[in-house]
Image (cartoon, rainbow, N blue to C red):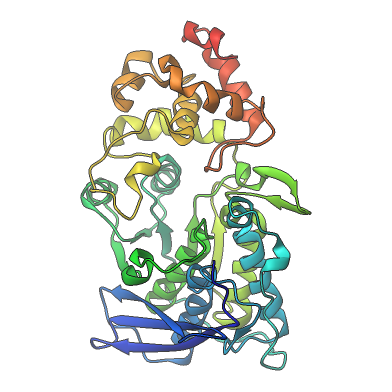
Length: 400
């Protein structure tokens, strides 16, 4: 793969009456022309013209840059405008968030650059953005965010739903949720992703990028909180001690990532906007039980946790990949709480009876060194779900 010598954050340009924001970057090389990258966010309303909005856009610019930085892994990162604390925080986000990428490409953390401070230490902001008690809830399309919205409805808590790059079936889910919806269209540098020039590819901390986009909307609309649906299982590493680094596919959903995002917002953006996960102290089994009893009867055939629905090339049709680790995880978590016939119909099949899933079950139940590189439950939660489901699912005796 061709390595760059420097990765540069170029600029932020607002167009279309401040409804569209373009973010640009480039990589410099010793013996060839620079490669430029760009992506954009398109909002439904014009963004206010203010310093606090500029600070949210700066956060997004730096966070989203990880997708393009990783292509050529320059040893130097420049023009980011970060002070010492922010430089260290963003270094953590890039290094931890690219953990799976490093593992898949047989690289180490030493192959990644560190953000060197370019500004003196800034005092925490005193700017405030909140002008309502309304929360902003990112909607992923799966069970977790539906548990969050269900709990908020039961508490009679006002909230807006937030979605980046929606599609037909997610739009139907949003209609059923019934809350006001804030949508953002994220357009990637498709020419870059489709190009044939050699580049490193792999997983990036997407949830951090989504959080940065949600913060823009929350500040623009005066929301009091950005409320995610990340649970305790996101803290368990997928693989321990790979070249001195614990690898966690879900690191961007972890409590560590949440603390960094929350502190970034309070230091550089808004002194009163909160960022947290409503489900942080719940286990996957707790969430599955709430979903089965309070959300599934309402949202049947309007949700999915299968990654096949969220790829960039997804046709937008709601479906389940019955041989994916994620599908196996969600099916087993729900098995103790949902009637057998109802669950099989909801998923369009029974993953327990598919022979190709043998490796999935081995990894999910801790019989191998590493869990699947997916957003899955902890090994202990999967084993507990297995024992709870066995009375209703006799085929599980062959699995574990």
